[in-house]
Length: 333
Image (cartoon, rainbow, N blue to C red):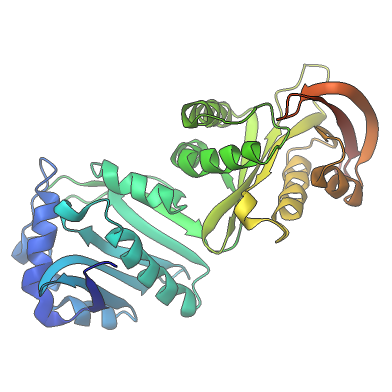
């Protein structure tokens, strides 16, 4: 059992908050905490967030502040996660996840459909933490013009839904996408790999996919369920010169832990929408014969082109058949 306590923050916790943030910032050269000039709200932080309709929490250990987090609604509708700090000597112990759970649950209970946050570009460890929690890069870098010359990345995630990832978002999603790919391969999915798939190989695959997104030849989709990045699909559009009207669907994957919730069908629907938007009325895909994916594609109106016997190895070393499908979409013009 953890030996910390998480409770609502109070204005009287100010000294502890300032000490905690100072300790965290001291790990990064150039980060300067000047409370009076730039962070006066730290002296009454609970009131600061309450006045904005938000909330603040503190984690204590033997009456010492060891962690903090806050959340508040934004004008545009999402909720922002703020002031995420854990004592450096407790990094990796699970406290950051516990604090983020509290803040996310509060925002979702208040009706948030999207969560957003900002993180200094120097805070590499924090970036890995947010990416593990299914946040992806979102939008341009923010310049603060402060004493520390801070630049900040924007991170965000929907609670539910599917989004197209740009190159920056794709790069920040590598950890979650690799987790999904490894899990699907372990379950026997016919997606070019055999188990056990090494994390390095999965990461290399998604890194290459991100390069194709940056080049504009591929559309990469990500699906969230309950705030967890749990599914993905790719639309490849780098076709030969005489086939500008078609595209290929690949790597339709759903985390094995979050299946049977309609994510695969939703991803395929969005793939077709993106193909229509791109003016690609003819789509092709292939899938392992006899699996759930084959049944899904048939139910969504895809037409079988044919079956190739012994096309790919199964995880047990036997050869399996692959079914090829096509679908023509209604595209204006």
